Length: 327
Ligand code: TRP
Image 1 (cartoon, protein in one colour):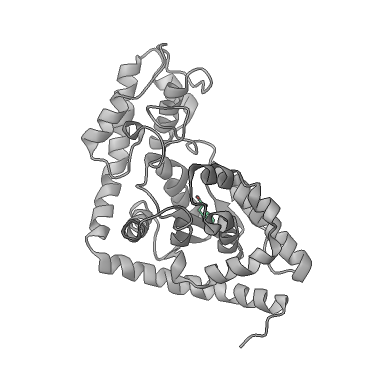
Image 2 (cartoon, helix red, strand yellow; image 1 turned 180 degrees about the vertical axis):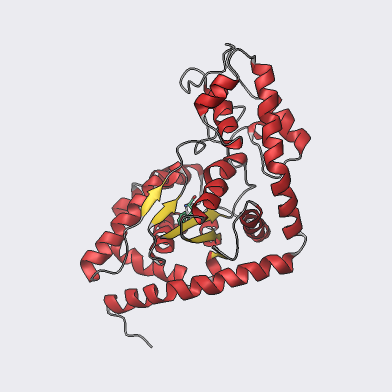
């Protein structure tokens, strides 16, 4: 089974990224032939700084290995290292309509936040469809916020197949049930993200233990006292329960029963400790890779070679089916 996912190279990675992303990648790597792509080309669709793009590309790559992707088993690579992605996006633009791109929720939201709305932002989902379709992907493990983009990729695949002949496998999105929507600890009505929301409520994967503990101690909860999962009425505490379930690899029900009758203070402290325990070994591996850029680039080089080899035949078929004269 072919697995593909893309990870954006922007912003510091958070506990939300771990829970809805990295954690899942490591689990799915066991299920088949997995490709994980640092999507640096997607990062230039919203305002960016070159130095930051450079740094975050290396950083995300290091996190992928640090959280457990095995370079022997999985293909981990940087999108811009494989030219087929940009080419596929251009070709697929022919079977994607202006109307469907305009309807994308993420485009609507992001474009409202910016003065300069780039053509790249509009085309973002086409590039993403190419990423997925180039590899004959069966499943795409991905965050909940990307459902619409995966759905579009499926439509694009079907449309291309219908118009030019069977070329693409139609992929399925796989969305995590728990932990996909970890919220900001200060504003539990919004997702945990470094780009929006109170920084105090955002746990970054690189945060040292004392900072992590402090953020959990300060987490917003409701005025009640029961550790009970009820996202409508008790958004803050429900978020902490979900985090605890993810971090200690158990279920929401189990966390509820474990903390039945205990106060919020105690619970918040223990969630903080559990997160510290999870992050410490990952941070150690991360720092090792960041202090040896040669090694990190070597690993990415192996990934890029494998990705080029795997995507080239699909791209060639696309050109041929569409009637291009090939060199
Ligand atoms: N858009 C995805 C996100 O924001 C990142 C991404 C780009 C991706 N290309 C992809 C995810 C291909 C899965 C498959 O998370």
